[in-house]
Structure formats: structure tokens, C-alpha cells
Length: 320
Image 1: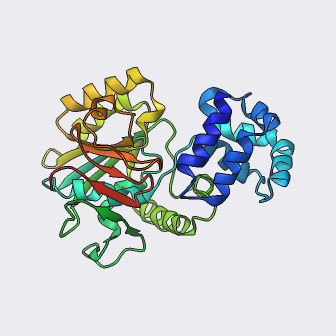
Image 2: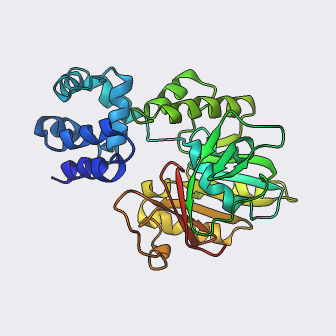
């Protein structure tokens, strides 16, 4: 029942407003005992709906009618499960830079950016993207970017007048991806939900930017690597450690350790996680008037806004 509820929650909370097909997929799987039994053979951390559906896509389970999809799923399950075991949900959504930018731009530059759970590092290029916040438009100094991020806003969002200067880009991931590698790009593409053509185009363009100027991403555990990465950043820069939808995959103890570590380091800390992931923030949040998934944007453990999971919205409740 717990696995069935996991797929139902995915359908109703995450996919509802983002992918009609995945909404139907999640609901259909949640009521299909045979398919649930297949998925239940995997370790619990590999039973994530987005991981299963992405693994299915890269292994040919793409039919739209559910009756055909479940047949493809069963026929290709050996390959699908192998992909799920080998891969992770490393959704590298460059769109999240749109919700990070108002906080980054408030910090004194130049900036050294360090992303934990960096995947392919696409969010390390906020200065290379174009942004549209209502009528406000921001572009890089050398002209409009092929990556244009549109973000709906409410509240007193401190929209910057210009993009920050970034002089250093680094990160850490248990299994880093290479924006220039075709197989890694295929996996990142599979993690984008059906019907989200804009995100697919954005991914391709962001990968081109990252592949042309690759960041330094080390392989390892974020709790073991973050201190070294901070101390290796240029001394004449403002060091910023940030992450989006990463800490949810850590144990509660590992999250507590990370929070304690990063607050002691000579850096700023920007977190963008689900509403209950960082327990230190929970009691300081205003009521959320929607059941749809939202992340909490915070600077140095101070909550500032609710953010859409893919950077599509920013509801500001912090100081302007």
C-alpha cells in the first residue's frame, strides 16, 4: 500500500499541473498490483516514480495507452530495472536558476558557486542565462542567451538590475554527469516529463553552455567534500554553497550534519528544498495555499520564498 500511495502522491501532487500523461501513469500504476509487485523488487530508494518512468522511457516503454505501456514494462523489465539500479533521479533543471537568481544577485560579487548534488552542473551558469519576470527582462552582458527562463512571481521579489559575476564554478555529486556526453544527455532528457517540450529545448541549450565551459565537479559525498570545495574557492570572491531538491535523498542525520557543517563554513548557503526537508525552517513558513509541490528557498537558514519545482514560479514572503 505504501508503494501504491507513493505513485498516487506523485500523480496528484507533482505531475498534476506538469504532465497529464505522468499524472495518468502514476494513478494507473498505483492501482496495478502486478506492476507494483515488479517495482517492489527494487530497493526502496529505487522505487521513485520519476526514476521508474525515466528508466522505462530509455528502454522502449513509451506507449500511451496504459494497457500497451504495462505490456512494454513487463516485457522490458530486466533492462528497465537494470537502468533504475544504475541511474539516479538527477534532474538537472536549469530553470531553477530563475528562483536562485534574486538571492544570488543580492550577494556581493564576484561569486564562487559550489553546488552540492550538482548532477551535470547546469545550475552553475546563472550568469549565462536570460530571465523573464513578468515585464522585467535580464540578459547576459554579451546579449540574450539561448536559455530563456520565465518565472511567475508574487510578493516583493527583489528582481536584480543585472546578472551577477561568477568567477568560479564547482560542485560535488555521488555520480556526476557530463553535459558533453551523449548517454548522460539522453538520461537527463528522459528525466523530463512527457509534454514538457520547453524544458527539453532548455536542457539542450544549457548542456551546450556547460559543455563549452565545463565546471569542476568532484565525485563523492557532499558532507565529505563541501568543506574542501569551499576552502579551494578564490579568496577574493563571495563563496556560495547551494542545492535544489537534493537533501530529500539524504537521511535525517546526514541533513543535520550538512546544515551544521555549512553554517560553520566561510560561505553563504542557499537551499531550495521541499517544504518539510529542512526541519529548521518548517515552523517559520507561512501557510501554503496549494497542494501542489513547492520548494522553500532560503538564505543562510532563513526562509524567503516558495519556489516552483522547476523554477517556474517564485512566491516571495521574505524581506524585499
